Length: 401
Ligand SMILES: *Cc1c(COP(=O)(O)O)cnc(C)c1O
Image (tube, rainbow, N blue to C red; front, side, top):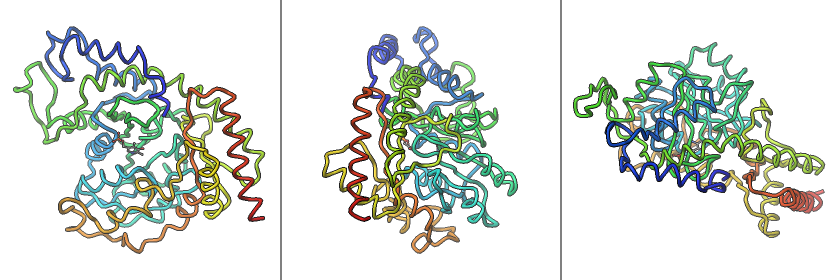
């Protein structure tokens, strides 16, 4: 988690600016705040990195994707194609705007594939919620062809892919709206926070109002503002935004260092038999927060995880057994268990969540082991890690050979 590695005076300065005015609220109080607008600054920094026309900071990546879906017009009864490999927030957001998730296959990009999306399309399909996973990006040319052919809406959860690009365009900017997370585990953190991006003024205005009880944010008298729509409270506080400002300014540096580390790891591990890597449709656009290893099969990957644990190798995720990132452990979704009744329970769903089969996704995630890249590693530490990974893989593949 690189952002947290670099927490320092820059973050403290931004927080102190807010503490000195005492205005922890992102709107209004124009006189007392002394020109301090951290949420606005945070949005400006995100626009600088992504090239988005509009950016809107909210309380989390989860509320950013929920807002993106709503602002794109996705709601009750709409079928939305989603991946079985994502942080659970994506699926929750689709369910809680009232929509109906339909799971489709991913491929070696770790994201939904064009073929997977096409196969999952029904007469009711309204949108695709594409998730750019593990610092990389989906194969956008082929996906946009399907989106356009079938006249679907695209919303992107780029929670793990801030600062990643595909052929020069930032993840999050291919569809109606996109979202990034700035929680504690991402390339940059606000403590808690998220940012929605869009190039569409109407979507931006809806997002801005939706995330603050419908306020239109015109004028300086909050109680007398117009409320064109209903919304809810997904606001970010100035304290969180302040941290987000300082952290986002560090992202170009983090990305550069991460890419160097990942390059070296990849070079060394390419020589190890049995190791391949997740596909990057545009290697130049990698945010390089993860090194994504693909082993020959699920059994070898499981044995490699055991070998890592035995050798004391840390800093990796085996998503196949992770409770929050892969469908195999999502019994609550399969059984639609939540605190109160969901629209999908009333409206029904054409896909049987209990019996659906996604063999390609099972195969890819079964083989995947992801190492978080740290920007504070020394070159020697990178080489030592690569050596340990190679030794563990070799010990496993030698036994099975
Ligand atoms: C982290 C993440 C989220 C949720 O972000 P929070 O800020 O923790 O709410 C959503 N989607 C993806 C893909 C994520 O990785």
